[in-house]
Image (cartoon, rainbow, N blue to C red):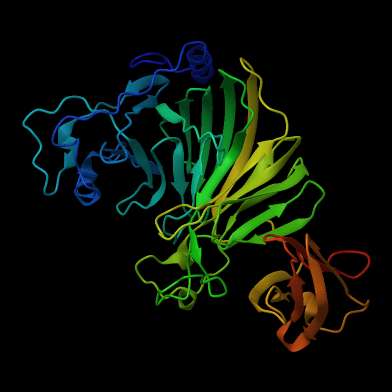
Amino acid sequence: MLQDGLRFDAAAITEAARLLARRPFTPPITTLPDPFSNLNYETYLGIRHMPERLVWKDENRPFTIEPLHRGVVYNTPVGISLVEDGIVKRVPYEANRFTYGRLSPPATVPDLGFSGFRLLTGGENPREIAIFQGGTFFRAIARGQTMGVMARALALRTGDARGEEFPVFRAFWVERPGHDHMIVIHAVADSESATAAFRFTIRAGDITIMDTEATIFARAALEHIGFAPMQGTFLFAPNKRRGVDDLRPAVHEASGMQMLTGRGEWIWRPFNNPEQLQISAFIDENPRGFGLVQRERDFAQFQDEDQAFERRPTLWVEPIGDWGPGSVQLLEIPSDNEVNDNMIAYWRPRAPLAANSETTFAYRQFWCWSPPERPALAQASGFRVGRGSSVRRRRMMVEFTGEGFAAEQSAEPRLSLSATPGQIINPRMTFQPHRKTVRVSFELDPGSDTTSELRLTIDNGERPLTET
């Protein structure tokens, strides 16, 4: 890979990943010397980078970088290099970059490398906007938000019975930013089945926009690969409190998954914390966008001043170019702990990637308060479920809210509602123009089945009035 002192060439990053894929995978060495080998999480958080040692601290640039210490689960070393005036400049590990809290480091500490880095805005009071740390995980936020949903550069065999494969970043090259609030980060990732080269172009403002360009080199056939994977926490909501004994009305970083299909259909899939692993596939071709969305933005909806779930980011992805046929995969993993990212979504191409193949793709991420493109459709603003008229039946109510329901409809709205498997009983719509809402109520009789896929939308015969 590009070493310290060499002239930087972005094409060399891709070539490095290509050459790495031709060699057998070598796992990174994750051992650490004492006293860093047995840290608990609280002690690890006490290791802090000194503010005056931030990269580019005194250069009046729009960004600074904070290298992160290794420890606890963040024990995989990753190299960090800068690109300044076209030359690669390695960031060395130096113990005097850090304060150690209650930890007493030895007099001499070897070169431990780093576990990743934070990206902060420049100025006297820098604001954290992104963090790359652990595996190929990273997060970002918009102005005024706290860290929430997490992205990955690559997902392999997520949810497979044979187990997931977790690639790791091996090295980063960060181009010194100009003065246009944009920064470019290059990276190489590695795993048993594949290597990859990435280029992240990050623009910071009221929202954070991140363009990702990727080239995947398959060591083996990749039958289950995920593009633009993301994950977040959903523990419970007011209408989904199975087995919950918690004074808070809701605990979640995202309330559902939004999708804009290649045909232009807007789909909203509210989350559930299931009793068993549930995997859903939303089949599509050339999707136009998808993401994990936090719709609840009022403190009263969570009542948690420490976690501030109402300030967690929505993560919206828009493919750049055509991704062809495939599906958005959604995994809902049972969880009883709010630290677990149990909601996972990604694009899974229909065709596997052949061994020794090269695949390129690109996409844009918006770390924001709501998706940048919003349809002129009524949104699902409420969902309730309870016992029905018999033991097996469940009674359900979905409420849609939108300006289109503020007045009488010029054409008779049509309800499209189906269950597979199962039977829909007594569906009805109730319009409330003064509230700009329509309520759809019905009963579901699943028969002997334990799961059912429900699909609901309202149209006027010519166009949809609501999201699906």
